Length: 423
Image (cartoon, rainbow, N blue to C red; front, side, top):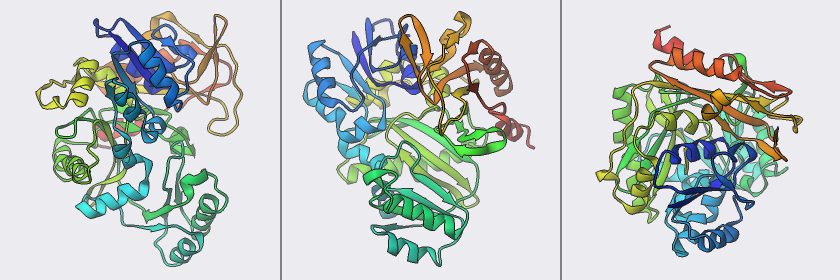
C-alpha cells in the first residue's frame, strides 16, 4: 500500500513515523517533507500548496491513501481535488476546513449554536474597530480572520497596544488578506488545553489532551512561537471536564457543522480555556496541532492508518481507538533568535540511539549532511509511565542532539508537574 503525506514539518514527521508501524504500508511519500525525514519517507519536491502537482503525483504513482496535514492546503481544497481524482484522503474538505480558515465563521458558528466561547465583535474596517476599543475591556484579544502561520492572534495589554494591533492587521496588512476582517474578543483566563479529536462527521473520539508552551523563553517569557514543547496528558483536563467538553463543545460542534452542510471528517482540534465559568473554545484547527501531535501520537496504541481510514469511510464508531495510560513530553530545539531573525545551514547531528524519538521540522540535506533550515528545527520526545519520568528522558535525549546556535526551554512541563502535585 502506498501512502502520501502532504506537509514538511515536525507534525508530518510524527505522522509518518506512526504510519510506518503499519506493515501493510509498502512506501510513504512526503510532499515536500524535509531532509530529516529522508530515512522514514521518500521525499518529493512538491510544495504543500501545489495541489495540482499533488493530484498528478498521486494519480501517476497510484497512491492508495493521502494524508493532508497542514492548514493551508486543507483550506485551499486539497482533499476535494484528491478525492475527485479517486484518492481517498484524511482531512476535511474545503467547506469544512473553513472552521480554521475563518475566525469570523467559527465565532459566528459558536454563537449560532450556543457553543461556549469568548464574547466578541467582528470588524471589516479599522476605524470602527478602533472606536469600539475606546470602551472595550482591557486586556483584549485581536485576531486576524484568516490563516496567519499561527501568529494572527495578539493579546493587547493596553488600549494603545490594541489600536496598534488593529492598524497593523487591517492597514499595514502584516498578515495580508487574512487581516481584511478581524475579531476582537474577550480576554479569558484559566489553564489552556489542546484536545485533538478524530471524527468522521458523526462520531467524535478525543485523543489524549495536551499542554503547549508557546513562549520562546523559560518562565513563559519572550515572544509567542509556534510552540516550544508539549506534554500529554494535560493534568488540568480531568475526567469531569472531559465529559463537559464532550457534551457542550465536541458533539455540538460536529453537529453544527453538519447542519451547515459542512460535515467535518479528519482531525478536529479544540483549543480550550478552562475558565472559572467552565470550558470555552479559544480556537478550532482543522488538522493535527504542531507540536501537540509529537506527544499525542506516541501514546496511540491503535493503528493510525486504520483510524484515519475510518474517518474517511464513516466507520469510526466501529473502530477501536486506544491510547496508553502513560505520559509523553516533547522539547523543541530551535535556532537562536527564533521566532525573529536566526541563522541556518549548520550541521545537525542526531545520535542513532534517539533517532526514533526525534521529529525533524526544519532541516535539509546537503549531500549526505543534514543541516538546519528553519526556526523550529526539531522536537525531541519520550514517553514513560508518568510525566516526571517522560520529561527527564526527553531532556536526556536532547543532550544527544546538537547543532550550532541551538536553544530550547529548560522548563517544559514544569507547570504541569506543579498541577499534578497540587501546588
